[in-house]
Amino acid sequence: MYRRLAPPAERRAGRPAVVLYAAGGDASAVTRDKSPAARTLDEILRILKPLFVEEGFRKMGRSYNRTSEDGLVHVVNFQMSQFPIGVQTPIPGFAVVPYGLCWVNLGVHVPEIAAAGWGEVDRTFYAEHHCQLRERLASGAEHGAWDLARDARGLADDVRRVYADQGFDFFRRLRTRDAVVAEWRESGTLPFCNGGLATAFVAVILARRGEVDEARTLFRRVYERASKEHVPFAKFVAERAALLGVPI
Image (cartoon, rainbow, N blue to C red; front, side, top):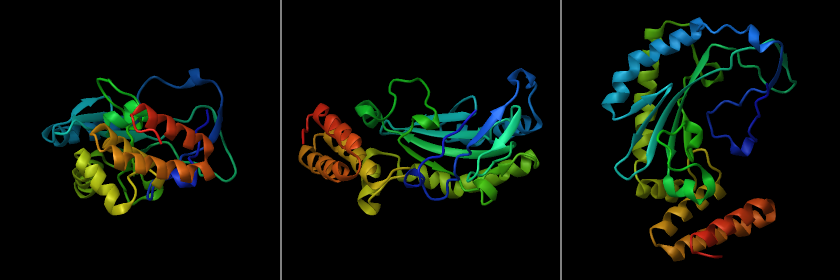
């Protein structure tokens, strides 16, 4: 099995690179019993459930969703490193991340951005990869992950502390469309976005609430720059703008 490494320009600060390796062997050899690491993660989720329920989240699998007052969907996802199947063959230039690590991913799903072509809409539950704005809690350890070989209670306490420091702030900053636009105006970008993509996302929000002139200006800015660097993206942006009623 292979996992693609995102280009450097698409990676956000603090998020570790995705592992890329080749796996061989018989997948049927994998036991259906949960590993110690998986059981530890289940215990962490059990300990932390009251925290997320109190914050208005509902749970499915290893993810949580809640809807903000402005209709944006906030997502928290607990992700384990991939279980090794067969012989692991490292590929030169890529780090091999061992099994038994856990990351906590955050995301914000903005319906109109998804409907404009950057995601899925009308789901009853959203995964972190459905989100347009994404971040990952920084564990401070190697690979930016928590080691599930540790005690579940201690790990849960660590995650709670880091979430209180980083997660609350992430969702506060992105709780409404106005907050998303304000974040972009202040920094020129958005979480998990380069400047062009962030600008296009803001243009979508503005177009959908009737601020057509500024939306067109932003779409045109993205189009003109992308036309020199990434023609397929420029074409896609022009198509999205036209569909939103602000042809450029």
